[in-house]
Amino acid sequence: MSWDEFVKSPTASTLVEKVTGYNEIQGKKSILESNPRLGVATDKLTQARQLSQEAVRAAQSGDVTSSVVAQEAAKANAVASVMEAYDLK
Image (cartoon, rainbow, N blue to C red; front, side, top):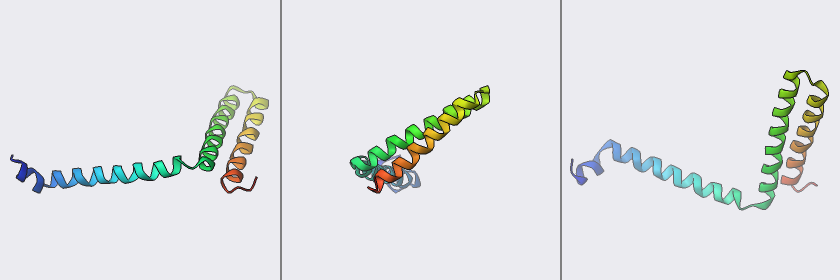
């Protein structure tokens, strides 16, 4: 297949669409990642997710006290992330 045939093929147009979409997503990510307020909120949400997973593991192992403590900490981090993202804190 020649280059001219390839460029006109459906495979080439699909490839161009995917690369264009990827570049657009990367551009949007860099805008979000450069905002320090969103970075803090993302960090707190990540911590909340990890604490929530710890709470589930603790509950599954029968450690109810640790589960409740981890779940409350997860809730606090989730609320803090929203407060900081909207500059309410």
